Image 1 (cartoon, rainbow, N blue to C red):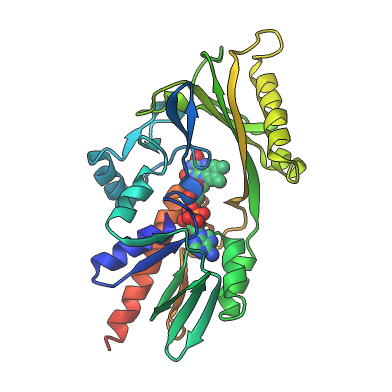
Image 2 (cartoon, rainbow, N blue to C red):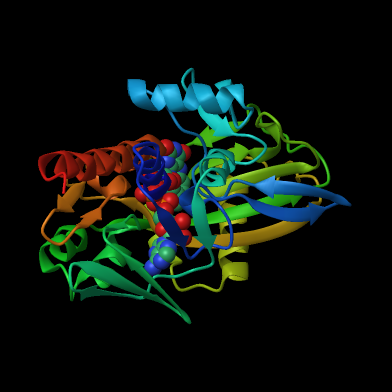
Length: 313
Ligand SMILES: Cc1cc2nc3c(=O)[nH]c(=O)nc-3n(C[C@H](O)[C@H](O)[C@H](O)COP(=O)(O)OP(=O)(O)OC[C@H]3O[C@@H](n4cnc5c(N)ncnc54)[C@H](O)[C@@H]3O)c2cc1C
């Protein structure tokens, strides 16, 4: 979200932008995973569950996505809750469509060459006048440590909480009132009936997030074991077992987000080093939310443009 938000603004301002993303497709932490279940394709939002839109600029972006069918309101999560449709990654896909995005390309090393940059990415090499790094804080710190110690220190000062996400599919409706579950104290911090989000169809599906503490306890567990343990936690928390056995389990998987939610935020929005022509953006520089990532990307694009206005050559 942060990278594409910056890239969209810069492309609109007439810059030539290439986006490299190591993911196989659009999403990042707004990913959606497709699975075949009972002969039909379903998709699980295993990262961000919904987002809010308070900033006027972000509201305008959300309104455009709504008009194109890429997002819809999801009242089950709140009055100002939005989700991508048919999957959470839809707005990411929508932004990527009008940009030059290279999926499956992991930036491994940045090297300053004269007044520009060389980016080594596996077998490929890219050259750019300006590099903007919009990846989770811990990963930004690694990429930047040799070339921009100040930016690396800023990113390296942030710690992100992990999150185990369980994706479960059932043969019938679980006897749980409502489509969401939240707790500040239980092992499960959040669960949602994924299949009840707007634009979804197919079998009953749930996404279950472990609390930061429970995620840490299980951090090194194989994913099958973590999925089973967290499903049991979920049934216990919602009272669906053992008294009322749930509908038959058809699918169970888990994803471990090592850097789910940044905890120590700088609140700065974004940072750009005009001498190096190197900048950073991400939720960790604003707020640990989809909207925070968008705002950070937009702020970084603003800093790059400001610098161009100051030195038009
Ligand atoms: C489990 C979970 C639940 C959440 N729930 C919510 C929620 O309900 N509401 C909400 O608003 N927010 C939620 N969030 C937070 C929200 O998802 C993030 O704040 C936001 O998506 C972060 O966007 P970003 O662009 O900063 O980072 P990311 O989405 O992490 O994007 C970084 C991108 O960089 C790519 N990348 C990383 N390293 C490299 C590299 N070396 N080379 C190339 N590409 C690279 C990645 O593939 C990724 O696409 C949740 C997050 C998680 C994980």
